[in-house]
Length: 107
Image 1 (cartoon, rainbow, N blue to C red):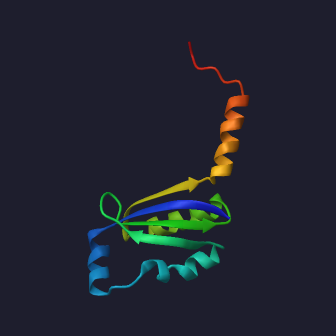
Image 2 (image 1 turned 120 degrees about the vertical axis):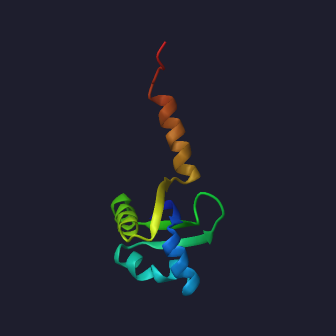
Image 3 (image 1 turned 45 degrees about the vertical axis):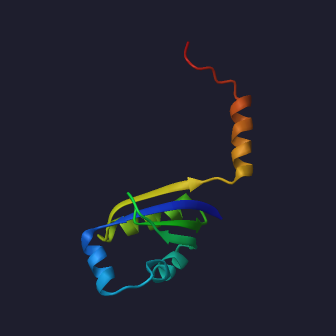
């Protein structure tokens, strides 16, 4: 499974709905994610530019992208950012390939 950092900023209307009916949106999204073969590994409320951050496990970019598009299209989100994550081992492979590819910056 691939990992993705998902960052969400709610609209004022979404916040009003959550205040009126407090519930864990990560739990509410489980059936949606299950249909995509995905799940949230963990999630947190946050202060700052984004209101919620979560780690999403999904089988591929298509599934993660489908979730992002569906969430954005729902109208409760004013900003959504999905960042693919790599394991440290994969990152080391990236560094090794970068070193071996022979790229030279412009002179």
